[in-house]
Each structure stands twice: as C-alpha cells, then as structure tokens.
Length: 259
Image 1 (tube, helix red, strand yellow):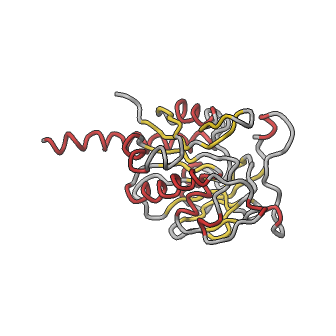
Image 2: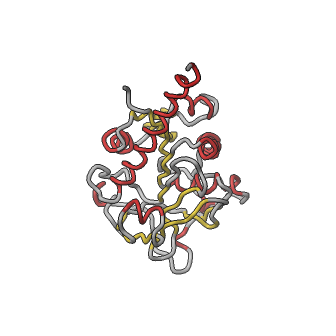
Image 3: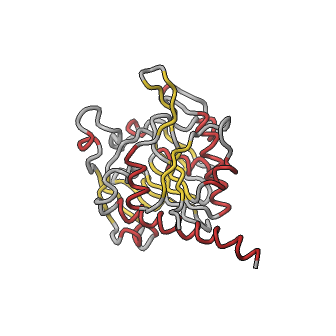
C-alpha cells in the first residue's frame, strides 16, 4: 500500500531576486520521508491556486514549516510595524484556516517555528514581533554567520510540563534544541496548551487541547538531523504514526460504506 501523503506548507521565494517560486526546505522532505515514513508533497500555499478543502482531500497530514516571512499581525488584531518584518499573506490565507479545519476533522499536522506560531494564531493567540527586546529574554534568532551545522546547533534547553504530552513523548522533562526565530508567543490561543518553555520563559512547545488528531507544534527546528537527533526523531515518528493511522481509517471508510 502506498505511503500516506504529507503536505509540506511551502513559502514564496524569489530566485535571483526575480523568479517567483514556492519552496520547502529539503530537510523537511527528508524528515517526512525517512523518519515519518510518508510521501512529502510541497504545497504552493496560495488560495488563488489551491483551497483548504482540496488540500485536505489530497493529503493525509501536514507539516507547517518555518519560513522567513511572519504571520501578519492583522491576523491577531494588531497593527503592522517595522519590527514585524516580511509577510506572506497568501500563506496566511491557507495555513490558518487549514489548522482550524484539521483540528475540527482530526487530521494530523506538525507545526515548526512559524508553524508553531500559526497554530497559536489560528486558535486566537497573538505574537511578540521581537522577543529578544523583551526584558529577561535571550536572542533566539539564527546566528548570522557560520555553516548550517553551526546555525542549527543545539543552543538552549526546553523544559516540559511534568507528565505532560511532550514529557511522555520524549521520555525526559528537559531537552536541548536549536533556535532560529525572532517572534514568539505573546498570548496563547484558546485551547492551545503551552507544554514547553525555554529557560527565559519563551514558549517552545504546545498542542491543541481536546483535538481528535495530532496537533503538536514546536518553536525550534526538529527537521534538522531528524533521523539522528533524540528529540527530533520521536516527534517525527509520532507524527508519522498519527498520519498512517488517519490514512488507514480514511481508506477503510469507503469500504465500510459499501458493505
């Protein structure tokens, strides 16, 4: 039987500052294929091209990837400022309603970095535009120089709630993660449970309470070295298991209706 299909939310980029593309990082596809054991499919995240309903029929699960553009503050009722950075309103128009639809249907998704923030905003939460400017916070942004290995190196601890969902999944209360983000959660959305924090109090892990499907999201980038990292691997394996289960149930449904 064919592997389940995971839609990887793409970002808009210009190649050579001229040619427009929809793209997803290779490491996302590798993690989906090699660790979650699913077929990766990069999605052109633009409502002029695809609809949420179509995506949910084509794909069994979704990875909400990181990306340089930020969720537009109008999506959580605030005014745009220079600190909010670049935006991708087309992705906003796909990703936010997709999160809400998946929560309602029980279709699995994994949120990563911007994806973590999208889940929060989709559930009614808000974001800080620049958390390193908040009192007592560290700089969570990607180092400007160095190799990829240096940029994705483990840089801070994340502590999970005692006996919480992430604690049980990881088998540890505290883990080390990379960090490559400028924004962070200001107010948690309704039902979005913050289940992990950096030492400076920045929310780093969460899920949607009461959702019938897999809704885990993290602020770091677990796609980096996902096959070997002891924190990344169980996260993608759990997402893959949930996607396989959803796909099997969906494929069995037409047979049950015909019986």
